[in-house]
Amino acid sequence: MKELLRSTDPTVIAFAKALLSGEGIDCFEMDVNMSILEGSIGIMPRRLLVRKSDHFLAAAALRDNGLTVSE
Image (cartoon, rainbow, N blue to C red; front, top):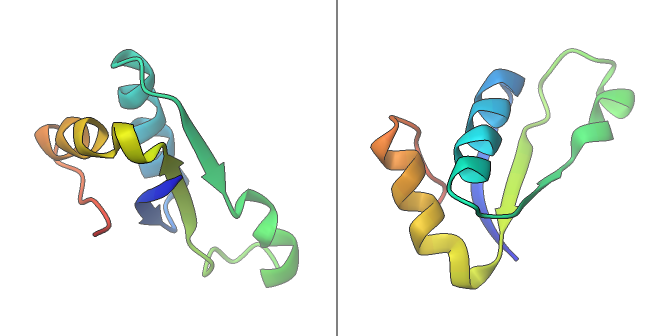
């Protein structure tokens, strides 16, 4: 798995997951439950991971829709 996106905004993560689903690319969201440790103030970023073989296509799909991809 390779990191594709990192954001503290849950709407960005949801949008990215919807875009990837539309392209048929599986993804996994990490650090979802970190809000318990931080007190739900949103300072810990969530990460979106994809397979290494899908990373190039996934990054292109996100960039085409205006999202910044982690490098």
